[in-house]
Image 1 (cartoon, rainbow, N blue to C red):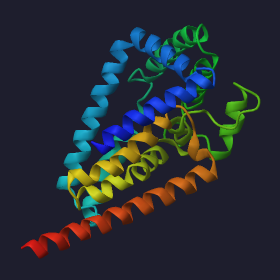
Image 2 (image 1 turned 180 degrees about the vertical axis):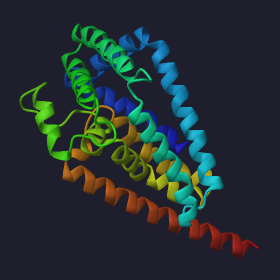
Image 3 (image 1 turned 30 degrees about the vertical axis):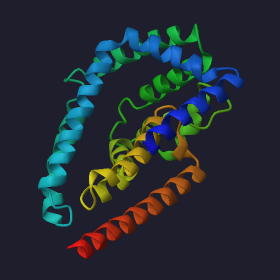
Image 4 (image 1 turned 90 degrees about the vertical axis):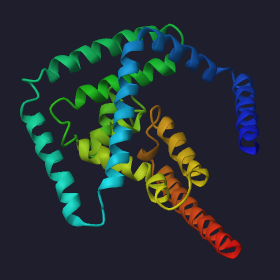
Length: 255
């Protein structure tokens, strides 16, 4: 009940601050609803893909012992082979056509956003530009130092693409993206096998908040945010370990 009360009070306070600051966030929500209305099928497919990925991850955590190098090799080797095959046959699989279709859809969404909120339209322009720069470089990326030059082609004074997932792909391709995602949800991975759901929900909240935020900003392009998140997950993991140890001691005392 305390958690729910904090949630509602926090949302109410945030709405008040936004209203006092001119309501820019409210305008962005209007644009998001408008774009979602015109892309219902695409969002449904994305939600399905995320659900499948979560199920596969859960199965992998249950069946694979990541402390044994043989298990890791058996997992990584097929992924590398499949990635190499897809890379070599991407044009035959129609990847270029799908990329063009996606960019055309982004152009339509940019036109929709421009009628309501310029900031949202700019973020979609960054997304379109970043994806176009990844054509032919999905697995290797373009390099960390290329992102500011790419961003400046959209807006002259920007140094990142306002989407950390695209930034990771630009920095080092699909493998940097995967390593970034593992690092992002590391509190959940570390605690899920050690404590109950009532405690795991807190690292899930941390990871979820940042995962959504990174859709709209490249926070980890700045050293300060990277250090802050590293400290946050270390402190939260240690706090949860202490809480788990305390629970175990209480159980033993009762027993």
